[in-house]
Image 1 (cartoon, rainbow, N blue to C red):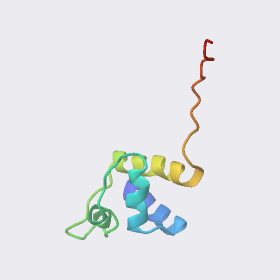
Image 2 (image 1 turned 180 degrees about the horizontal axis):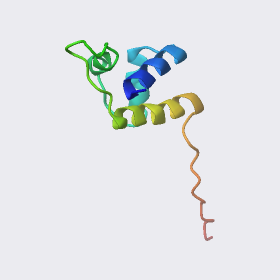
Image 3 (image 1 turned 135 degrees about the vertical axis):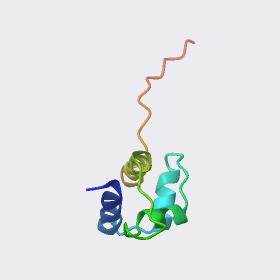
Length: 83
């Protein structure tokens, strides 16, 4: 199973659009365009087909976690102020 297959299946299972995917990737400061996404979702024999790299899928998944769960709380311990 390729990254393209995983990406397609996630898109269908989560019922999200290309615009949603672009916004999810923005959550982790990763820029991807809707036309790039279209190339990932084409059939392998299409001339404009493009392989989905690990970086794109990784950033989408990281953004998806933030989208579904919310941002991670800041775990840094605040120092008590000296007064």
